[in-house]
Image (cartoon, rainbow, N blue to C red; front, top):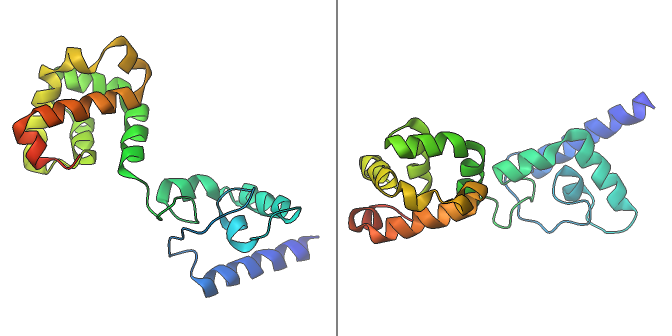
Length: 168
């Protein structure tokens, strides 16, 4: 059994090396097993998808594929900026709330970058979030990162300096 598993791993590595899948993002359609190495190797649906799902599970590659936009896990091979924003806000909501209230902070600067604000506009972004803190953090927003992102976009579009410098 160990020999078969070893041969399979060597075959998989050779296949990835030859096809360049490990370094080039792919936007291929995938089957019922979802995106990942298994779906790149096994294209047809049916029982073969069990093998594809098992392969994905063994290597745990779907999470990294979704995060990096590789292995056929996104439509265009890159993570969409709105999803980056949503994930970042979800993971850092408590810190962002504090930094927005203070009008400064490292995570707040990162959020400004995710909204396409250049470095010289980050202070304006931080000032806007501090000034509009009550509008940005309502009870609904505390429960939904997407609501906070939407509220920030609205406030950016109302601010003449940020509306022209940030790419929302």
